[in-house]
Length: 193
Image (cartoon, rainbow, N blue to C red; front, side, top):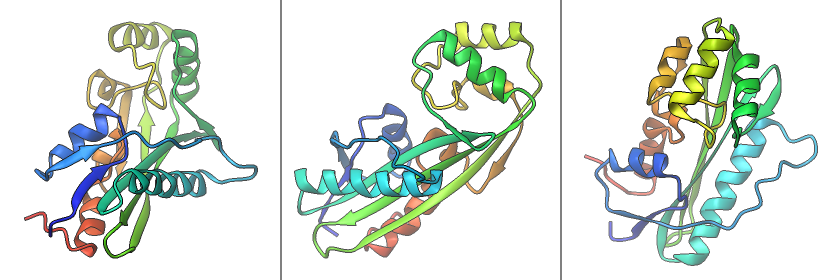
């Protein structure tokens, strides 16, 4: 297999996850409008955006195998994004307290050599403890998760917010479901082991 592997993402979290597979890869920045379409479900949104990001990466690197990924968090049936500030982070974690949030992560692999495309949507559910306002503020002040969907970093102190986790692959929660990605890459002839 000689095609270059490209991660169509500038997320340091996704780059760190992909490094676990010990594959040589480069990253690029896909120029994709992430605005949800009218009546688009969370699954449909992340699948569309994963495909769009992989396609945008393939334009930049046409003879490559490109990985695109996108993730949304859903609480009470509503998509929540990155908080971007302390006030919104407090609101998001207050809403999550004592509840379950489901994350949907879409991953698409586009092969520029043979024009094959593979994709999946991987759900992962986080069950939150009942949190006091003080606990929420302490967490936000310590970790400042303003660029993380749902206002937490599960790979850091955010783990203290949870009662339990439910899903196929804990990497999904960080933004790249490696177990499923390995399956998609192997379908493209990329051997991991």
